[in-house]
Image (cartoon, rainbow, N blue to C red):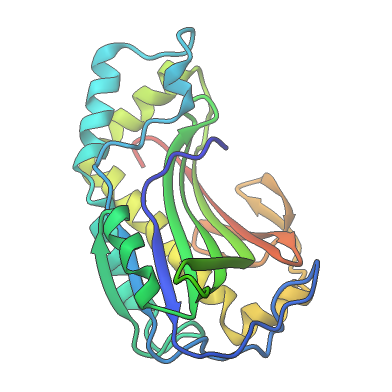
Length: 271
């Protein structure tokens, strides 16, 4: 999926011990639980409307200007930055990541300038939003990197990445049509329903992050549970079920030092 930079969140740890990471393996499940009691959370804020994905850049698939304008208005009005921050504030405390995290929001230059004051550990999180698969799938995701940071003898920041995780929740149209017809389906839902779907997707990806560093999630680093095929209303999404709820399913992806969880919900226009 083409990444479009939306925001970056950095969770900094206060403990000084090194990560228990070996080559080609993820962190030891017994590694600091939580990672740190007080994690500064740095959130890079970006302008709204960075939602439109690659499908709009292909002339043969480009929807009519009125459709595009309406969807851009709907997405542009959705408070992505505030919604992600609110979800993190609600779900990170007393988790396997942090007990009482602090939160700091700003542009990337402001956040980057403050990194040297918040050593020695960071969990960098980049939220992403995109419309893909011929406008049939609305993606909300978090890309995370667990890093160790230090200052060298010259005072230059040294950032070493050890563990990556991707958490995506896909809102999938129940019936896929042409790109223009798919766009009409999203447009017909209106701002209230579309906002509710985006709220759920944002909560889901933050839930995935919290789950992955819980005792249950850490145990799955080495061996993911096998709960049967990932199926919603007869449609299979590949892989085994990690978790399943009312109308949604999670699937484990990746392995070793590259962890990933994908979630799916089928969306029916007018429902």
